[in-house]
Length: 433
Image (cartoon, rainbow, N blue to C red; front, top):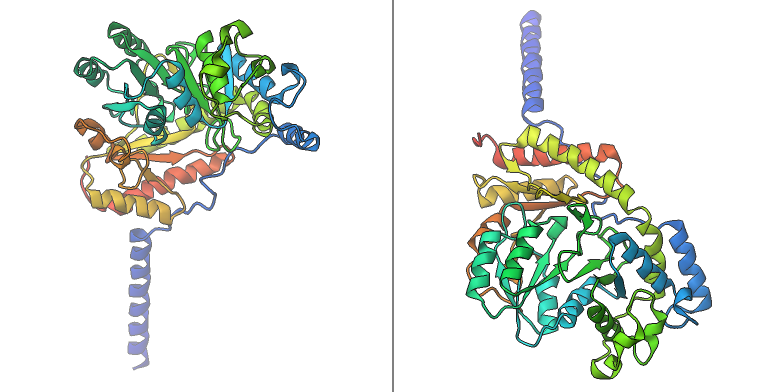
């Protein structure tokens, strides 16, 4: 009897061990990320020190100085212009203000049509509306850039359109030479939204030079971080003068700028156009200045990490996703990751992937989500009047993940693991080969 009981216990133990082993195989330990995906770049100590000294004096208003040479905002404008290679630079309270003003300064009149990407952030059509324009959207492709074939169609379909606002969404450039050629052939002025493309180059030249005027951002999640802030950059003297006055250079305050044209260019502009009071404060300029010095160093670090993440993702899950391809001729700054999920995945599987990644510490955004501000269906203030099937289909599977600079290299191995494991959990045994 004792021997029989022992045999039964032994058999039960073996079965329990086997069951546990199978459980380990079918329910492996999942990778979990504990770092904050929205960790912004910190302000260097020298920027903090300059901001503190400025607060001690109380001279945070850009014009509360004896001359331009003493203005921290003017110094910041000089350094931005030197980095991008532009002749003129006007610092503003946001990139949204810069985009709005570059349209007005370029001659946009109320009701004028403005061609722009169907895939961009909602701030772009908002700026068009703010400037008094009417947005006309051009399809975006699976490389997340403006589709040149659809641009040609829209230029013909909208013969009265005189402006094209190209948004370098997530730092990705379309073929800028083809874009400029198309605009020139149709008498359209090209404007560049470079909010995401500080440090990005086209054929060795910083973005913002193919168009007549450009805007860059210093919002918290951009390459320079002042919380909020922006710059209008151009080589056009009249546009620069108008922007400075619109921003708040009333009376003769333009002399307290360094990167604007001479007083003769300003003429009587301060009495002819309104003052919107959208200047950059000295505090924002102070924290930006030291960040300009490290832009190229940070670009190299971002790009190295991006190369690692994309290589591993394609190696492990290339049958389930694709990576947008950079347009030949561009030098990128990959401070974030975009992936296109396979259309073989159902909507439910896509949502399961997003939920799994979030549960394991990695928020992944779907550009086509019904609440995403980058989805054109949410722009009811400037709705699309033409069908945009290519963009809609792309957005339905296009995902976005930040690549925080302050994370450690090993954190990006965890990022790859979470993405791959979440895909596995979402699709199960589905065949995507």
